Image 1: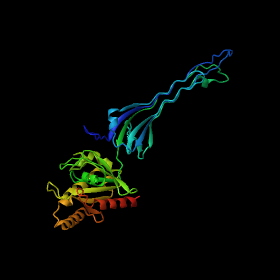
Image 2: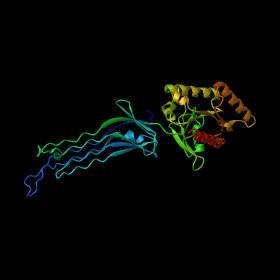
Image 3: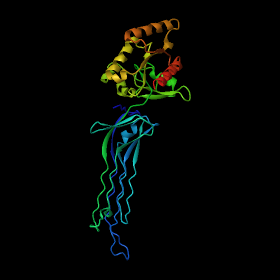
Image 4: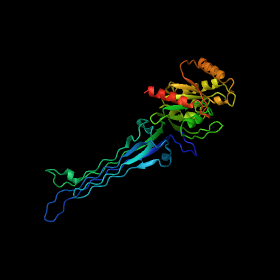
Length: 347
């Protein structure tokens, strides 16, 4: 579970939900002046309130459920005389982020996956109403005293698991410039600093090229060696890449620790493959970042050699490779236009 003290991001939690109990039926007989033989007139109870989850576009965390994990819908009201039916219990609708998956704690079964804005999922059915004694009247049983009680509402323990929905996912080592990139191309304002693990939680940004052309980018914490075995922070958020359609592998071409950019690329490739074939097999582009750090004299020659070395080492021929400076926004617009073209053609 991705849950950090002091953070306002939570992508997995367990809740309990209890639907409302159905109202009891009523046993009653008419008692009216001048009508000596009044019949049964006990009304039915009201049905119990159900519990729904609804996907809301303005949410991107499950943090609210951490502090309030128990929910109960309203009970139905009992029936009464004169064939009066009790009021139904109000349904309870809980708001969750788009991309929330709902699992049964008991069985592990996937109950639903809320992928669209305002999509609703029934997670606990309200109890059935009890019947009043008027329902038991017949030609041979004219004065029934039987009635039934309302049924209990459904009880469930649920695991809510959030997978952010984005078109493009950013991967790379800590401090490769992923947060700088998402900040340069969108209005997202992640924390940026010159030390590793600045990003402690996923960030979403909307890239708008014009009124009609836009896409969503997800930046997750940087991966490190043995991330697929649980080392570091990034592995805890890799599931958020599973819904993306394109991965951008951001590579620092001028690492402060003097590491080899090609070795760094291989490290990330290995961790993605160990984590999930689904993620590893997604379309993935290489983006060399921080070209502003290179001396202008041998800039183009160095980039050509780096690209050739990357293709030869990774045995990739057709994967697009870009060179940008996220800090100076150099090459970022052209890259975003290429991404938009790819997304439009891949529908």
